Amino acid sequence: MQRLLDLRLGYSEARGTEALRSTLAATYANTSPDNILITTGAIEANYVIFNSLLDDGDEVVVVDPAYQQLQSVPAAIGCHVSYWKPRTDFGFRYDVADLTPLVTDRTRLIVINTPHNPTGAALSADQLQEVYDLAEQSGALVLSDEAYRWLEVPGGAPAIPPIRNLGERGISVGTVSKPFGVPGLRIGWIAGPVDIVQKCWAMRDFITLSPGGLNDALALIAITHRDQIAARTRHIVEQNLDTAEAWFARNADLVSWTPPQGGLLSLMRFELDVPSYQLANTLAEEYSVMLAPGAAFGYEGYLRIGIGAPPEVFRRGLDETERCLRHLLASGVKKRS
Image 1 (tube, one colour):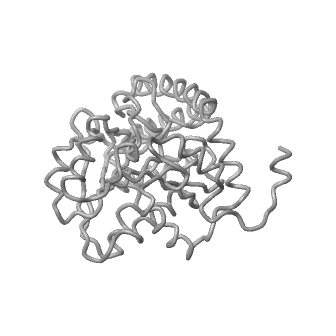
Image 2 (cartoon, one colour):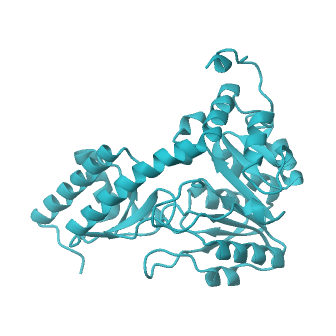
Image 3 (cartoon, rainbow, N blue to C red):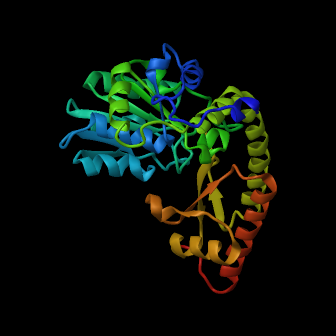
């Protein structure tokens, strides 16, 4: 605490402090502090990567659905964007066979997100290597949005290495927001080849100049204690998964889901014949439950659910969702045929 109180609030180091960059570099293979650029959240990291590496007319392949920025920024630059969609048989899952025909010798960047927002699908280590090999064969780079790194789900997919570990065509983007529950710090980072990091640094110099010094210091504390934080998160997720499984079993006539393979998000299917936007608004306005409409991600008939809330809050949210669905059914809303 005294170290924080003694911190001078002048301009901070433009790339992020040596201490934070060194600590992060140690979590990747063959990575030094010069391979790390601290940014104002993962959103700035992605933005400067796109604007540093892409030009009008470039071809980009992006997972779909995705955090909107991952698709919209390349499109705004003028890139030709193709979409790699998870399969929906047996839950949501990636199949690299669907990616292969999308990647050509004109592809500049492949953008992936694993674990995946919003489906909870996760690439295996072998699949990640296949994606990297595709990039190597075509001359492309791979940008991996790893916002949910360090968030393993009990019973889910094994943790895989960050794309940075696979070689110089891999660019990892990380954040303290999701794995450490501190989005207010607005700290993210890029881990990649030195030349790309330097290009991104030059671009970022025109946007935010440097990360906040206090934010940098607090992020260092969180990352240094990531094992303790991960253990706490795992305990919360275990309780919420048990609660969710019992709830879905009790309401199997109305809802179903595939638990997330990683991260904290999944899509749950509902059987009522009502638009997902309408249902999400009803839940928010009348039951104080926040579930994102599946239609926002291209999946009508679904709601996005998160399993990271405090267990009592999560339990109450599910109870209120059940009450809403049962009320709608009793009031005459039909089930989908």
